[in-house]
Image (cartoon, rainbow, N blue to C red; front, side, top):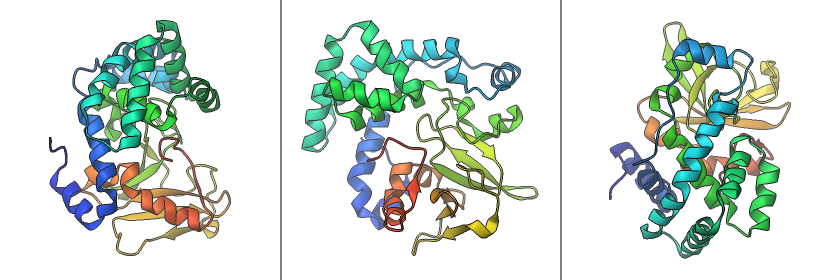
Length: 283
């Protein structure tokens, strides 16, 4: 099954070391998305009321419980379905372990697992998975792809959150910190939007300043522009030594708004002693 568009094919021809990762990620997404029950879409006024205190949608008890119900109901079937995907040997073993473990668990234990994920209790989730001897990265990836699939497209659209007035440095849907930014053309120039690598929601944020520590002193920030990668740059904060990968063009969002598609930029940043924030999905 070909799940790549022309932009992605062209990009992978230029970056062949990413092809296996791309095929795996896109195949996972294509396998997971069909049949997932979507969350109900609240209207804009309800969203404004829910988010007025800066609490993301899935951190509200009612919506979190609905999301957990969907995850618990879908996870065993999705893991079973993934058994037919072609993948490297280590992942074959990892997905087999996950499928067998999930089929044996009580609903309460699956609810606890999904609750830890949605509440961003990463240390407790890591401890839980270590105790159960489960492959953490694969399970996190599958669960977050399930979350992404259940969130309706209108709720992930940056235009929705512009109207709703959300401008925090964390996702209005799930609460994760962003992993990427996108500069889009607006009437007065270009505006910055942040992207969640969990549920893949995009929302507006201040054009200038560090997304993570709030530094707005431009003398304590700089830009890294990788060679032969004109569409992407890294906005670096010298105060907290963090960076955010920024897509500064338009038209190839299907490529550049995937964190894994620019993992080589993360390696470059690591070599320079910079810290990646906002993601626990990529090793």
